Length: 374
Image (cartoon, rainbow, N blue to C red; front, top):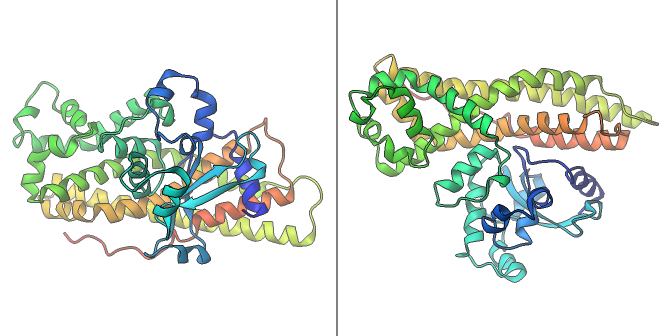
């Protein structure tokens, strides 16, 4: 591991998880003595259960480690010394060439081991948003302790209220299709179905109306729930991203700064500002694709628009997650690192941090898929 990678790893020592990082070492430090952590672990292997799981933007030389072209990989970092992350750690990527052999030799984990399957589920996700991670595991019958998901009951309640408002137009359309919704509060009933881990089955009447095969519909509904989560999360990001961009523009390094460092900091700041704005706009465009499809179903009498959306939802969901996850990571980590109790950044540390942000945003400006046909 390079010096820069070591410094970035040390930065994560006390931070909680973000959309890009699942800090299981931090979870162990905070909850390792609790019964929930002991009885409902995310991984049964103790080394994995104290690792850092990172959604990593692949560099050009790293893409050669995979048989299939990809932009983002799931990186498992195993600290050499959990008490001092400055020493660094060993890492490997999920599904890199030779991954199965490495897992068996290093951890005794075979391809059919539950931990290997959990890693595969995590790798399928475009980001490590706690809500999506929890939902992904739940729908596969895995229920780790709540301490692995930094998702408060208040956030769950706000998310539920948001979903209720979003799907209200669908209730009028669906009451006649599903007798279970003919109740005193059909919006609450449909919201409960949408938020359940069996939403695909619970909303099967809609799937029949859209004439989608069960496997396409179930996968589409999960990604639909993901779109709703991202739309909800985007509201929070939109409220904070402006101040973060402004703070990145105004920050000055502490201590001596040479001419080359000044030039690198200025270049990185401008590049990050541009990429954040472009990425936020691209994210909003993708959410508008969903809005148009949903409007076609509920208001314009064009159910085919939503059917095509559900069919394309897995691909759109992955791209949306990459983009919003990168922005969420920047907002979360910047606010953490710039807190009043944190020491000011030296020029070297600031360059490292900006480089990490720039890498997180690289590739988020890829050309978009064609808009869905009506």
